[in-house]
Length: 205
Image (cartoon, helix red, strand yellow):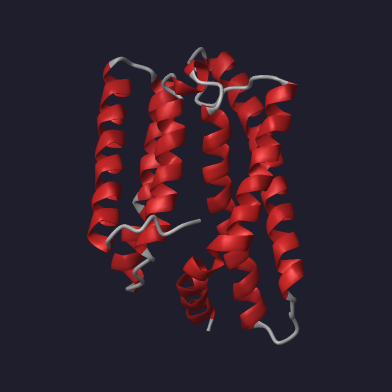
């Protein structure tokens, strides 16, 4: 994950712009009564608001680059559900890579928090990288089951599925790019997560 060489105020502005688009999409999907898509947009929008909620509740300000990356992953997935997934063959791979970086970050923060919280846990660097990749792959498998389950549930209630299932080849491709995202986080992105690790460690104490 790179810093994108953007000033912090521009990162925050980019986050606000993507959130504004998500709000507009939520209104649109409700107006046209696409409840399945509306639910997906609402959940995604709620996730992008979590950094601000944590800042207000606990006084922890997330690294702007990290907040931007999280919002970007939600934005790409939500917009993709409206058409780009079907229009562009590469779009799904890009989205999975970006999202996998976020998922890998969650796994890394959890591991480092428990490691620093407990004297009984001591993990060396290479194993942390392996853990990140395995964590992302496990989350990817869970996501594929979630996509399948959401499709079945949507068909049962007669609404459009918020998550699309595109076959075995798509699943394998998704897992490959999930691995790429995990590797990117392991090699380039862990420095951005030090603040999150410190925050959670203090909360545990």
